[in-house]
Length: 152
Image 1 (spheres, rainbow, N blue to C red):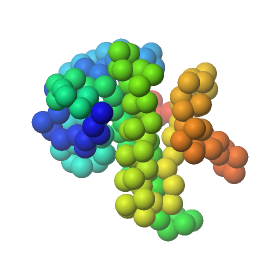
Image 2 (image 1 turned 90 degrees about the horizontal axis):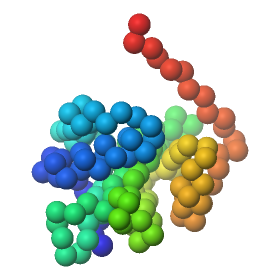
Image 3 (image 1 turned 60 degrees about the vertical axis):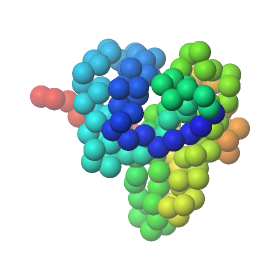
Image 4 (image 1 turned 180 degrees about the horizontal axis):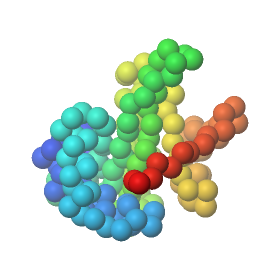
């Protein structure tokens, strides 16, 4: 398995799997909007997306992860938010997520980040176990809140 950094050239391969990821979390597919969203992130350099590919096939996407940069005012350092990670159904149980997260961790180290953050749905036990096996730990220092912004 190879892990590569996505470019606009990978958009046609990435967008369909990203749609499946969104559907996994109960969202409607919106393939055109999804492709446009990913195009903007890559074109503007607003995120880093890693792709997992088999060693012998450049056209098959096994999984992806997307990281967004942020910063910690308290530590005065960069933080990476591992916002999206998904493995294709036929590539599960092959350690694809582990390989993607190792590459993400490498990016965090190379950019002198103080930490990487990840969230998942509270019932996604498989993801929680995977994150914990990679060294993530539950944040007990801070409680997170969200403020939904309606389109009124």
